[in-house]
Amino acid sequence: MNLYRIKLSDMMDAMKVSECPFCFIDEAYYQLYFKRLLDGVLDENYHEEWTKGGGFCKDHSRMLLKKGSATGQAILYKYLLENWKDNWLNDEFDCPVCSKIQKDLIDSKKVFMWGLKNYPEFLKEFKASNGLCKGHFLSIYKDLDEDLKKIVEDVQEKAFERLKAKLELLLRQHDHNYAGPKDSESLRSWKKAARYYVGGVDKKFKV
Ligand SMILES: [Zn+2]
Ligand SMILES: [Zn+2]
Image (cartoon, rainbow, N blue to C red; front, side, top):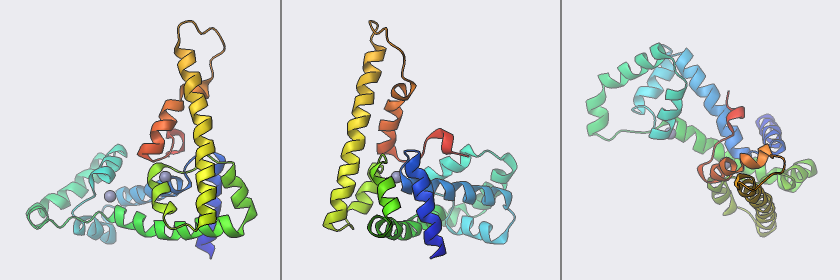
């Protein structure tokens, strides 16, 4: 239950700052995993996981690339190039980050549902939140009972009403006749809108 408590509290932190709670948890995992991988390239377990899967999928390779570390990545890719033929020709790709994130999502879903049903503070926070990204919404929605479906739909609907108002304000502010004060949150609202479709967290929550 300890892990559940940590997840509950992480999800509530995400809701407080208007982020998708599931993306928020994923981000924390990415930070930890990539750091450990790059700091521990010579560590036998990480080395094995990396080579066994034939590296990461496209998305996670791009994320890793953004972390820099020339020497760390040089060692990792040197490992891969040593086995490129087996990997490529036998199509032995299995991104270890994807499989961990998928496994973790099963737990996170349980925690999310438990929180909505049994923890009034969690429900209250969720109702005041900006809902979920498209990917996580769809992945969670199908497993919910009718009561919870109604709650997540309402939260999403209200979040999008607020977001649409911000997008409209952005358009008004970009009109050359606009003379009022600039609202910085509205000016960034197009990025927030896109993030519902792309997933992930705001730049300021990336370490
Ligand atoms: Zn998400
Ligand atoms: Zn992946």
